[in-house]
Length: 225
Image (cartoon, rainbow, N blue to C red; front, side, top):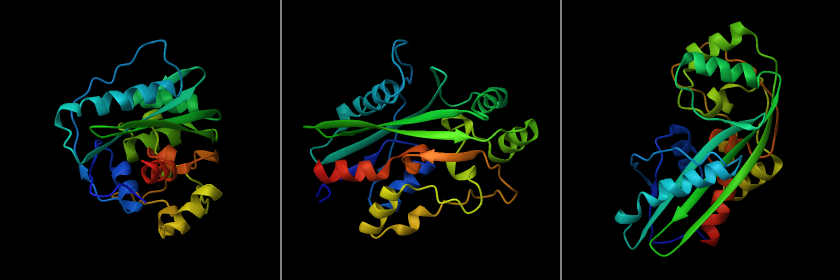
């Protein structure tokens, strides 16, 4: 059973996280605070989003009501031993997509659940393999989709081959169990009617994790909270 009588706050500006949390039937308020998202240089892969999601949750410590539950999250792309966060501009996005082209990378999302009396955090990893991308495809994608709010400069839902069901078998079974199977259909980005790029060749693990919120694992943590 999900936590009862809690006012849930999703501390994220990400429209994808808001879409996914609504999608699994969680009522929440969206609220954010400015947080310095720097992290110690010695942190690697999953340690980075775990550090940052806890840091974001700590920013709400002084405003936590007795029945307030904060959900924070952070997503990174990890490739060749270094992190890709959100690109600062078009040129940085281009550099990131060139590095991802034809290569395998990992996506890590850290999630923190925090109340006055309890804090739980966890991370999820997904492996993603990209097709080779031409300069034309990279330019089109950046200008059409403006992926400047996305770790690694791409959104999974915009980079899928036609007809690909990106969800794992576990995710599909989970959505069936909670009566939300329609969430398995990738959303269409509003305002973009042109073709996308078929960047993703293969996803191993949670598709929703690549979108920015591993809802199956989050739902399980909320049930156990």
